[in-house]
Image (cartoon, rainbow over all chains, first blue to last red; front, side, top):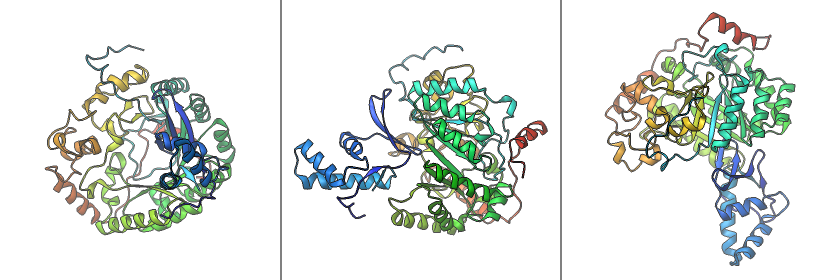
Length: 92
Length: 388
């Protein structure tokens, strides 16, 4: 699957929401007949999937937060967003 | 409610909380699908749990850590209190899913369900073609109603999953079913081969796909997953009878799900009552947390300690969790035997032969799912649209 364009505006798909789960003491993604437990990076990406922040800006934000080379972060975020899109969690 | 003493040592290895509960609100259903896996002995309307008990169960499920609730049945919309229960689930913070045939919910009622906080709808289709679909479900006019209902769902903005149970009589239309899901704006399709329990087991010789059909279906699904990535999520449940390894039934016994029957019995899977040697506790007598953590039925096949060989030393034991207990019982006579879907089961040759024999069986008529007694048959009919 080819990478998503950096000017796309990723957003949570209809019926998907992030929730803090007190019983497990972690954030969870609730989606149609799916529950996903995001790791720390995935959670940060999902929080920025607001339909207003471009994929490029998501990559910039994470590169700054982790103080890491942009191309490395870009590859990780592209792979992650691609997977989330295939799972129906994120729309591009 | 009686309190149950927690068995020795159990507090140290208490199971993780369930992810979801399946609330089978009723066995009443306007459709009579030949592939239904509900038990042959359907619960009568008068024996169903009350609204108040379901509300308590919903609160207990949320407190126990469940994240989602699937309203199922039968047809859950046959309960007049469905909106009330959806509202209660939303207030408890549960993600709610309505699993429906779509033939008895009008536009106003759908709006009321959306307003109550429903999160998602799973709509069944028996086939892409009306004639076959309505023969499988034994309900004339169902297809048009379903299509209309799907339009209202789309209009409401709720996410939609199309559910298609596939078998010999509709599998040749799989590509059309995928097209149908796309045309209806579904974000997800669940293509599930029949699970042979309850009514489906009675109709197995009419439903079993041929191996050629299965191979074509597998190819269509693999191709569609590539082509439709990012547009349509495709969940696919392959058929056990042609399998080499068993499925992780319910993600493992007592690991993720609790199924609550219309009368309040709490089951590790919806077919578990076929294992008549197990006792299933009822929500009217015990708390959900007690049942989840320490009931005999949930403990019996939880984890790996109960497993026979070769399961117990198998490297896949925590992948498939030993497969399906109901199938082991139905086909080998013992619920604690190796699931015969596994090629390592001594009975595996039997299940393969059953598949080949059934797939070649002559076409006869279906045994349709019907309520047990005259009285409850009338009750079911009352909840159906007048035009049937």
